[in-house]
Image (cartoon, rainbow, N blue to C red):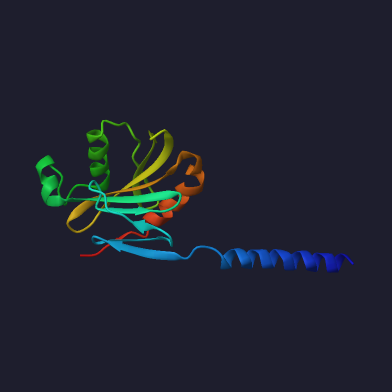
Length: 163
């Protein structure tokens, strides 16, 4: 009798696990303006003046701002500038005091901000392509920070640049 109960429970667990896998969102590679990123399906690209790339999901957004090296030369940033130094320049320019982290192949900083009465969590990565630095933002409501922070880092690692 115990064996039948165990086998039945095991069968239920296996079905639930497989069912969950079958209904999970598939990853999709989004490509825009020389940048590609792999995230779950369901993001919509929108156009906003202040960003090079803007993708909106139901609970998160992704933005990327491309800053050409030629325009950054005016402030002393060039192809020899490190990601950390570029991040410092961004933080200083925004008169902020964010801690710049270099972990697991990423250079990033995090912050929270109230927008239209809601609290948002941001993870901002700095990246470099052949001709530009990129300021990449992921955002979710602060209440979802623990859910999305590891995913934002995972997605950031999929970013690639094309010409």
